[in-house]
Image 1 (cartoon, rainbow, N blue to C red):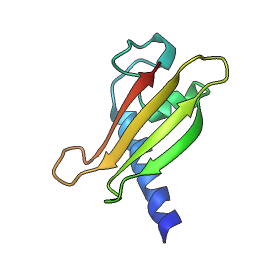
Image 2 (image 1 turned 90 degrees about the horizontal axis):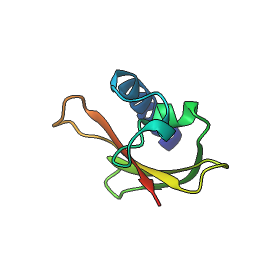
Image 3 (image 1 turned 180 degrees about the vertical axis):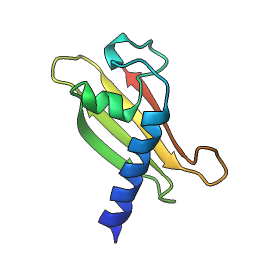
Length: 94
């Protein structure tokens, strides 16, 4: 059941990132934002870590890229009080 819920969660994030308006490459984005999860994966970033909150409504995903000297951390989640309900916020860790 957990793996199915996780797959649905990731699918929701992927769908929401398509709607998101951001630059195509994480390297070209300012320090405030690192783009979307979909853009990071497309640009060759790899998942380095994963941590879920106890309420299972939000998740931290840590990304690394072999030729970059910084990491990118994303907070992704689902909130029924928001529109759109799936949200994410990615930023660089230096």
